[in-house]
Image 1 (cartoon, rainbow, N blue to C red):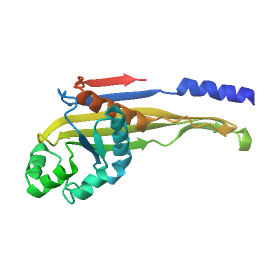
Image 2 (image 1 turned 90 degrees about the vertical axis):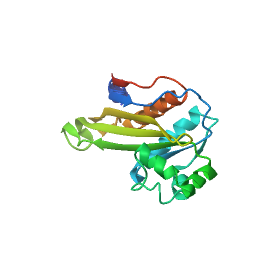
Image 3 (image 1 turned 60 degrees about the vertical axis):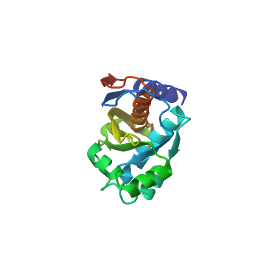
Image 4 (image 1 turned 45 degrees about the horizontal axis):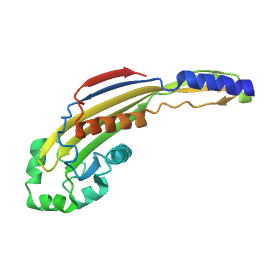
Length: 218
């Protein structure tokens, strides 16, 4: 039993953290770090709620002086203008929307100055590999490729401007060594993509240069 655990531990150390990433953005560097006091992170679709909530939690840790209201609260207050099908995707459409007195009044009532759109998706391939034996004597190895893409658009509602966009891609392998029992070694592509997205938005808002494209193998 001890040999089995030692073997599985060695495999876990070998495979852990094997991920590839690619990041690019057009986020502009903000010169006034404390210019925003209220922000919200809005998911583009219902399926994006996990990514939006993850980004908002990360930004809350980085910006203790900014008050974050939930995306659902913002969307409900601005209904129907920020529903997934009607939310403005271009600066011209956002400016036109913000020129509407009722919309402007609602946003001012909420106090939101920074709006962040978030969209994300994860795909995973079928498991592939080989298993031999039966019952408690099964041994072998399976693997699956997992990929997460995240996009974020950051808007300055005070100035009716688009701070920019960021795109993050993480790809990793889910490993399942099998020696009597399966041991799942996951690829944390979602959390990695979320952390990188938060980092790049934070860099922009704190005046750090984040206008670049990066490819990385981990």
